Amino acid sequence: MVILIMERVPATLRGELSRWMLEPKAGVFIGKISAMVRDKLWDIAQEKAKGGSGLLVYSSPTEQGFSIRTFGATSRQVVDFEGLALICVPKSIAEVEDEPAEPAMPT
Image 1 (tube, helix red, strand yellow):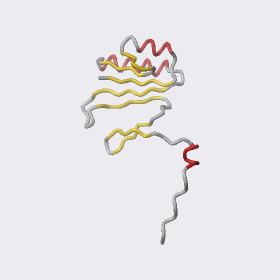
Image 2 (cartoon, helix red, strand yellow):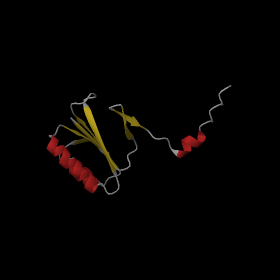
Image 3 (cartoon, one colour):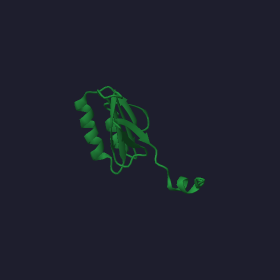
Image 4 (cartoon, helix red, strand yellow):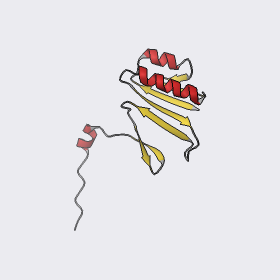
């Protein structure tokens, strides 16, 4: 199984990807394709993204059962934590400024 999530990419790229995979929601593609087709589509997506970004999740023989690739400035970041892929949602500057300061520890 392959999942490809594209953000801020041209409609022509989405149309090209939809020839090989289903697009159940705008920018989200799923399908069962070979590794060779997956890698070729990934290369095409990177070439034609025009400033957009992408995240690819596919089955692989890892502890989690899948691997993740990204390119561009995705809204989520993949972080390797002792061999496990975790997703990090970066805080916006406004959220950081609105957070209350942590109280000082009593001595």
